[in-house]
Length: 281
Image (cartoon, rainbow, N blue to C red; front, top):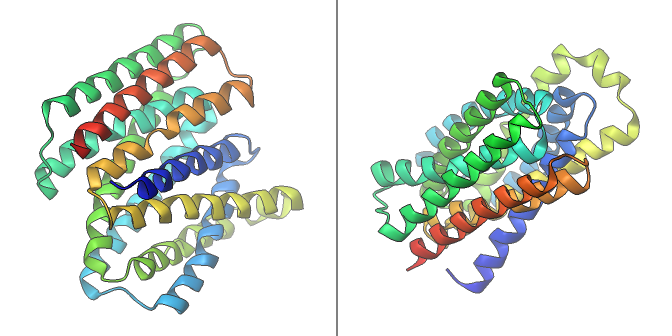
């Protein structure tokens, strides 16, 4: 992985943690997720118009990714409704490298060296530290299970899109179609919750659209990186976002206990760094 791709994915990690903080800070999280989806659709249409369509081989992957993202949004809404950002986010993002590594090994044929599995063990230890925080800051079991479900969804669409964007022959076209397909999410949220959408202040509407643009930019950067570097390396490095999320959670939302959550996020981040280093060796 070149230094340029490394920095690209690291920047995407920060953007991803930032847009999750926007969702967590929203009063009506379902409407906010609809606005974020709208923030994907507009630039998505522009990308399709400018870059054209991807190859037909990528279409099944776009459809599969769209369905998985629906599940992801539902689970994310549930998790953030009942849990803290600095607990939900590290669990969701910390588990996904394990699932991506297993999925990539069986589907894509990426075999992990011993050092990578040592990194995965470090990630698991970090997650156990996070789970221990529940004694001091209880979270309903439904929130914990939703966070784990988010991790499964993340791993699923990461692998699907990692393969799909490579088969597309047109990375920007693939990204554009993927984002445009989120029009179905927008139609559902706005169609079933229009009264709530109308009640949202203009400032919140603009914040939601901005969050969508930030989220879309983060994922687009990751997909572009996956055309230049192995899927496992990019996916692991992306999860350094847990460190950004923990810091945002304790500093912005004043979530506690601070020391335990930051320490857990750092352990997870260290494990991810080991995975990335091992995958690059």
